[in-house]
Length: 97
Image 1 (cartoon, rainbow, N blue to C red):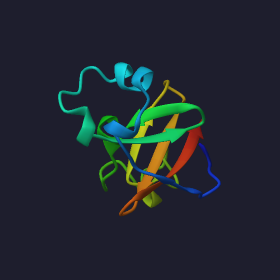
Image 2 (cartoon, rainbow, N blue to C red; image 1 turned 135 degrees about the vertical axis):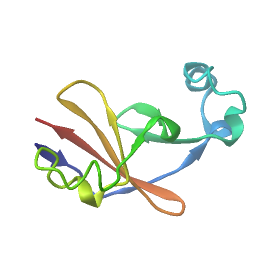
Image 3 (tube, helix red, strand yellow; image 1 turned 90 degrees about the vertical axis):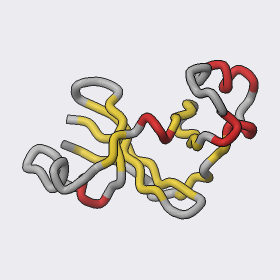
C-alpha cells in the first residue's frame, strides 16, 4: 500500500463556507451550516463520512502507515483518502494498492 501526501494543512470548512452547488451535494445533512468539510483535489469531503482509525484498524499488516492517521474514506476497493485532523486544519493523503 502506498500513501501520498504533501503534508499541507488544509482549513476545515463549515457548511456556510461552501458554494451553493457544493451544499446541494450534501443535502442529507440537516444542519449543514455547522458540519465540517475539507477541499482536496477539486472535491469537497464531509469529515463526518470518514471512518475513524483505531488500534483495531491500524497497525495492520495490510495497512502499514495508517497508525499516523485519524480517519479514512474509501473511494474504491483499492484506494481512498486518509486524514489527520488538527484543531482547525486537516492534512490529507491518498492511499492506493
